[in-house]
Image 1 (cartoon, helix red, strand yellow):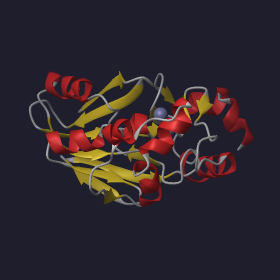
Image 2 (tube, rainbow, N blue to C red; image 1 turned 180 degrees about the horizontal axis):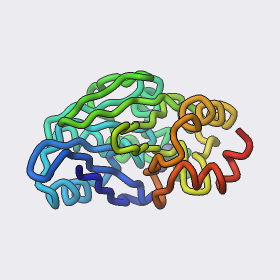
Image 3 (spheres, rainbow, N blue to C red; image 1 turned 60 degrees about the vertical axis):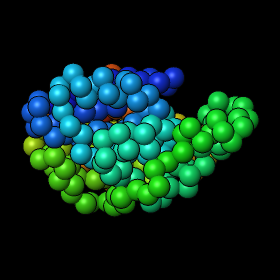
Length: 218
Ligand SMILES: [Zn+2]
Ligand SMILES: [Zn+2]
């Protein structure tokens, strides 16, 4: 199985290509606003993306969704509790970068016309890859992690990082909710679970349990 990542755009957002094998269909997890970077990742393995899963709707993960969905004629999946964020890139630019941008700039980050909806506990089977959706609100209301049971891999988005957790000071964020999601959905997973986050290096749940200060509060 191919699991390959690239850190793209200003925020060095890790997006992932997941595919059973080179030369066939695959899926993307998160789409930073850098179509060339996404295409390079895809082309290197000669994979045809047939679905885009979005951990959440922050611009650094979702801002390239419209272009990616159009380029590869695929659906983009997002939890409905994050649609309001996707539909307001101007608000996001203002809060992320601390500056007002004209509508034509914000329009570059506009979402696809529609999303396919994610919900907690659903199992997606896309391109021969089976992923369980874990709704983990806190960083954003609709944040989801994706779990590949057989490989023991968790695509953690901005919920859990090596040594840290997602910030909750942006619109819709809530730290207590994030810790509750951690306790309910993430901490019950096995120690050997590999955690592939939305920023920074990969880690394991065992290591985070021992060393991540935020998990000591849960
Ligand atoms: Zn985020
Ligand atoms: Zn992020």
